[in-house]
Length: 405
Image 1 (tube, helix red, strand yellow):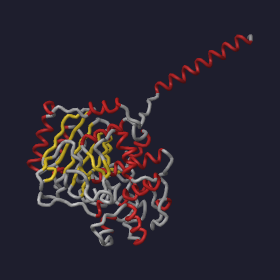
Image 2 (image 1 turned 120 degrees about the vertical axis):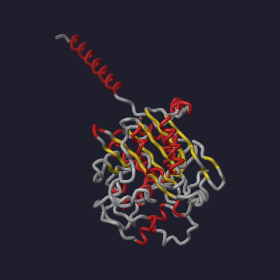
Image 3 (image 1 turned 30 degrees about the vertical axis):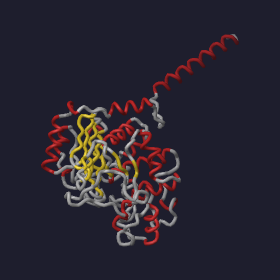
Image 4 (image 1 turned 135 degrees about the horizontal axis):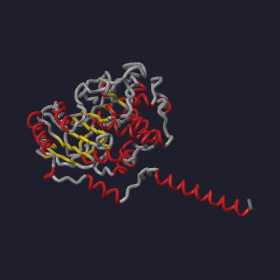
């Protein structure tokens, strides 16, 4: 074989290798950039378009009955296949001043906030700034408990006490709000008894996610609010979502007031509205639809990270219900995966459900604490979703509907 023939074969091989490589690259789905474009904003605007005349009649009747019979007061939305099929703002934003709710009213999300904190932690894991096996002492050396790492906090297996109750008798000036660092210092100083040894049982409580938020601040060098705005809210296009803490805002700048069981009792924010991460994010039903979209399309986390966040890390209840990294979940047959979270805090009570297989989102944000959200069975049946209600919760510890939800 001549040198010219060898050279021709080499050139042809290089051409074929390059062509195959480019072909393979073209088949690999691109991860969306976190930098938003006008096209992103346009797509989000189309997603949020809703024509009341075309709203789902069954859901409309169901919500009206939920309001009249069971006292639901708040905003709700159902989306299917990236289209809003029904939405409604029903009732008062502030009963005392007779302000009506609007569909873009911002609610304190209570423990739905935990899904955002879990997402932020997994972002830092992806970036190599954090490991799930990192001990809390790595970030806060004076933390008094041994053997508690990031994963145990995410899955509510740390065995920690609940700071909501622990600090009540210690924080003397109830008019002065606590910060996450304040709580961490109180824990270090007083060393309250744990509920259990680490990694021995599931025990849902707010301390886990308050500590995770403190870790986010220590790792990033930014306030939790700034990190969430830069790395989650803005990339997801959530323009009406914020972190509000009473350490920064003497009066939380939203119009929606929480009411506890009866209109006579408007809940006033207090020193416990200072710590964030377990709560403290305020948002709208529309922004929660955009959050769902950003999670599904990989804008916030890689698929591998989402899979681990949606995996149950505790013993399943009733064979299906579990808790992952910031998400409660239902695991059904044939890969059916429904992830959700509830919330109950200072007059707000919610549920946020995402059926990842059927591409359905159900959101109820309420500002009158009552049992209305325990009566959603017929809606779930209509949407052909698993029934999520009292009893469909993972593990022991706090009861569904407590302030720890």
